[in-house]
Length: 293
Length: 234
Image (tube, rainbow over all chains, first blue to last red; front, side, top):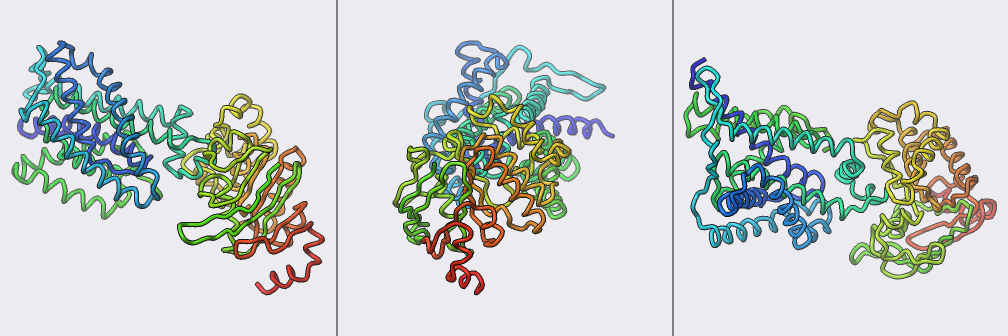
């Protein structure tokens, strides 16, 4: 294999890890609340700026500020749920998707406009002393900050799986996602489950944003692009497995990256979407999805 | 124990339950019987706070249940098993039972309660690690009842426990319901199966078109010509 192919496999896997990380939160909100939050990418954008400003203003290393960003955006998620998405979850399960699309598209516009107003439209990247460091295996370069993004994605997926399978609250989450009525009849406070699941979803988007501003870049308009990737990943993986989402993210990143080498840069997304359609026609519930999910 | 007075429930403009009154005394099994579409399930869902109550009252041990969130009712001891597949199919049998003891009141003694449930339903103990989605219809109903018992109910509400089950399994389940009553849990059940239900129920109400048509003990209702007529004409 040529050096170019090997290098694009590495970049594809690393970028794909980010796709997976962004998709985790989207899948959580969709699976539990049955809402589709297209402003998920804007939450990522805010997380990216949070890390960026924590670094430039207070000199906080992005890995140090990561837990802070998680907590702050968890709080922001709570506010968003109470102020907006709470009203969406009051409707019938089948109308939630439509209503959440309307509400979250509005949120996209508002958050983008506010970001331009307060952060300017400039592209920002956190440049630390280690930003340019990389491992080299043979002729292939593995940038450290991008590798960190993949590691964070894997850790987040495993942590989420642990919570879902081992903790009482995680089981309540799974129960609510299967059937909220039966969950309520079990004694679970469904509204609280919704609140916490949404807040975790927002915090996960923000964590992804921190990694994006470190390994890539943030600007007010990056949100929708990430949301779109996350949507593809969630559909590709299917609901039901968190590590499956990271695997599907890596797969998408890999396909895009190889397509741009073998077919041409302008076809990377086309190739990925064509493959996506082919896969879905054979596995309509995704790689790891359960038939009823 | 439970007193329902003049309950009215509507889906938007479509009123389904018209002034239903009934009561469940302590340590008894009360059944609400009626054909499909009579408003039986609607009555239960409204009682549990899953549908808005338009008018009327529902008091449990002297305190009103109207307007209380569903999970709080479970904490007070009012536990309902919904129609079909009440357990979570993506969770294992043991996880389902554990989740049944979700409320603060039930959580403390959940180990002992689980042992009791396994004694009542040894089949569940055999399948404790299996996912609930792989159980047979009868086993699923056992799990649903077991899960409800984990919440330490004082009033257990069952929505058509016989639905889709073979007669021999229904008999088994009804036997368990009687045992549960004998353990000091009051039972309210909704059913379509007239004869089998009247054998186990201490008192029954017949619901038709959203109102109580008649009521009485099993023998009284069996002797009632109108009930016979209504059910034989089905």
